[in-house]
Picture (cartoon, rainbow, N blue to C red):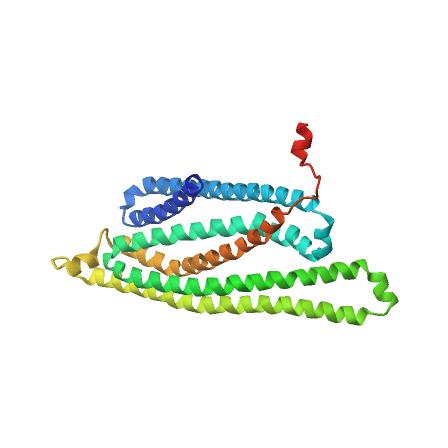
Length: 321
C-alpha cells in the first residue's frame, strides 16, 4: 500500500514545488533567468514522469485485482449446480459479468487514483496556505467538519441510490434477454405491445434511480461551492491582512498574519486556495464514487462463494492428479 501511495504523494509534491519555483523565478533578477528556466524544466519533467508512473501503477494493480476476481467468479459460476440457474435470472448473471466487472476493472481504479490524488492536492494546498498565513489554521477545523458532514450525508444517500440503480438494472436486462430469446413467440401471439410496455416500465424504474443520483449530485455541488468560496475568501483576506500588517509590529497576531516567505508565497497560497474549490469537490465526489463502486465488489462476493456441483473437481486439482 505504501509503495502504491508513494508516486501519488510525490507527484503532488513536485507539482506544488513547480508552482513555488515560479514564485522564486518571478522575484529573481533579469540576469538569473536561465538557471530558473532550467530548474522549472526539471520540475516539469519530474512531474510528468511521476504522473505516468502513478497512472500505470494504479491501472496495473486494478487490472490485476479484476483478473483475479473475474477468474474466481467464472470458475464458481461454471461449476454451480443447475438449481442455481433455475432460480437466478439470466439478466442478473449478465449484469455481474458485464456492468459489475467493468466497474471493478476500470471505474474502481480510476476513482481510487483520483481520490488519492485530490486528497494529496488538498493537503499540499493547506500546507502552502498555512505557511503563508498561519492563522488560516483557525478556519481548517470548522471547514473540515463541514466537509465531513456534507460528505457523510451525501455518501449515505448516493450509496443507497447506487444500490437501487443496480437492482433495477437486472430486471431490465432479464426482460431484454428473454424478449430476444422468445421473439418468434411474441410475434406469433401478437404480444409486442405488452412486452414493449413491460420494457418501458423497467427502463423507467432504472432511469428514475439515475435521475435521483443526478439530483443528489446537484445538491452536493451547491454546498461544496459555498464551502470552497469560504476557503478562498479566508485565504485572500488573510493574505491581504498579512501584507497590510506593519513590518515593525511585534504582536503575535501580526506575526501570525505575516507567516513565512514573501509576497510570492502569499500569492501562491491565494492561487491554490482558488483552485482548491474544484479539488475539494472532486475529492468528496470521488470518495463517494469509490464507496459506490465498492458495491460492485460486494455484489460479486456471493457469486465467488457459490457451492459447486457435487463431484466437481477444480481444474488445478485435476491437473495435479
